[in-house]
Amino acid sequence: MLTFISDNTAPGSTAKHAVLLLHAFPLSAAMWQPQIDALCKAGFTVIAPNAFGIDGSLEKESWSFTDYAHELSILLDSLKIEKATIVGLSMGGYQAFEFYRLYPRKTASLVLCDTRAEADAPEARTSRDEFIKAVNSAGAEEAIRRMIPNYFTAATYTTRPDLVAQAENIIRKQPAKVITAAMRAIMMRTDASSLLSTIHCPVLVLAGDDDKATPPEINRSISSGISGAQFRLIADAGHISNMEQPEEFNCALLDHIEKVRIK
Image (tube, one colour):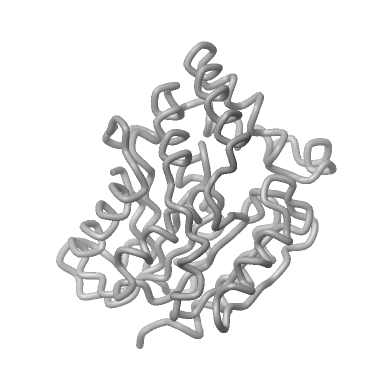
């Protein structure tokens, strides 16, 4: 996988803790640039991988989040990272759950953002099937048409056209077969509802207060299901809260990681 790794981490290094940023669908690690900048400035080791096929990463047909979690573990091992704070937004949150399920000892903490624990209901699976057919027919522009309206608050589409264009351009780079492969992985994901009560690392749950895709109450239920988890709303933010309100998001993220960083 093509991966951003902060300069203070390289193969052969002895860093013990890192922050692993897992992106939303069908965006790329580029969505994390405000967080990469802030975390690097604060001296953290940052790893921001792209999912299979995204932004030129190695493609893999019919991949699952289990496959991806194993790849992430191999990546951490290659960098001599003992534990990581796993930060996942939307699809990245599903991946974070799967990573914890498989590698709890490699998980220093979890930051679950604008996501959900439960698997798809039947009507959601039907909608995703239709999405796959449409994108296979019309390409990335169809994914833009369907996904972008769900990303931000209503005001942002008028006041922040640059931000909207940035998200559109990330999606536009992705081949249709890569987008649909990621959607299939979403459809096949394991229901993480029963996992919540078994999570024993520090957890922060973040949600945009105007997230229409995974509303705050869904994210609050994740927090309620995990002993000791913290919940924080990001004001004036929709589904991609880290891009829309980076300063508030970064403040919450840095505060959490400072408390769990391995010295």
